[in-house]
Image 1 (tube, rainbow, N blue to C red):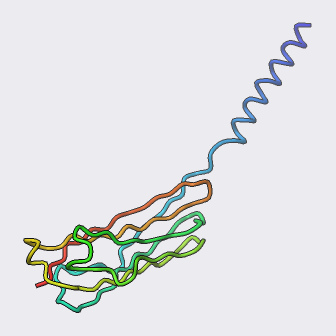
Image 2 (image 1 turned 180 degrees about the vertical axis):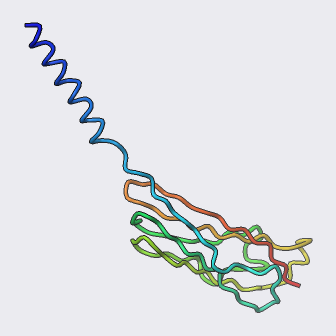
Image 3 (image 1 turned 90 degrees about the vertical axis):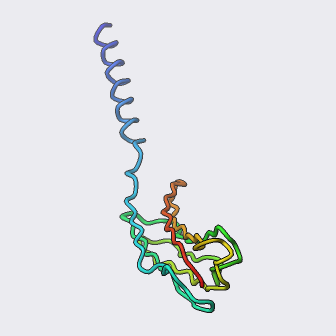
Length: 138
């Protein structure tokens, strides 16, 4: 009887250990966001510049996306398109083109502009990086 109890306990411990090993979380992806080209500190009205961010991951992602953000939306510097995205993969090049629309003198200095690039993986994990610029339009 004692051996039977030890056998049952042993099986329960083994089952518990195997269940923990089988349900262990997958390793977190290692993602790198590299700013290939950004916005210059000064743009003239009518100038256009493309911000390019390269995304590299050691695991395949569902999609990558980059969106612009503005402190003064619609004034100073604007995005020509609303953003960029790429489908599944482990690498993506994202681009947003900006245009200097009007002077930033009324703001009392440069206009803060940012882009946020991010990726989403299976299971819902997301990661992102923000790139900030201050652009003066005389």
